[in-house]
Length: 204
Image (spheres, rainbow, N blue to C red):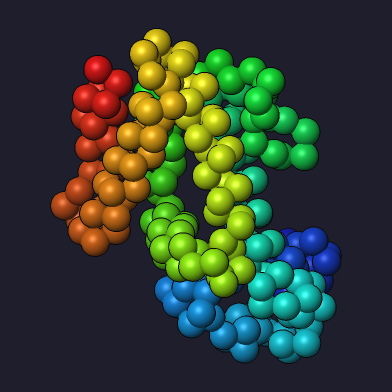
């Protein structure tokens, strides 16, 4: 394609993003423990030393990947919902406005997730691995759980739920379970459609 960037002409930031996108595919397939830096380096046409130059370590690469994916997906979701993006691409804080209901938030999330199964697989695999305290993403997922629950609880309150935090927890648990089933049988499960049925039951 005319004007397309080659690996050798990428800026440092473009190369970093390219590595993260490639790493996402391998982590989704193998998890963190089965990840081999050499495979990513070969796919990126670079040396392992060059890879480590950008991220420092295998653990650094994983955390950078999670941060990148969270901020990328959050930015896209907030744009769809018309929610102001906090500075630095962070999640909404305790005092930040979040004028979206839980139904709209979760339906927009599943519609987006239905278009990126490898990213859903990435998080599903890593969340299971990171239950172990010696996993490098253990603390990351604990922190992530807090901001996601904060976001969903605000949204549930906007929908008038009598117990917003409990409803948020139930919605997250149901979404995790549905996405797992969908990853196993994508040809027969309409992720976004099934979720619209589920969220109406949860909020009622």
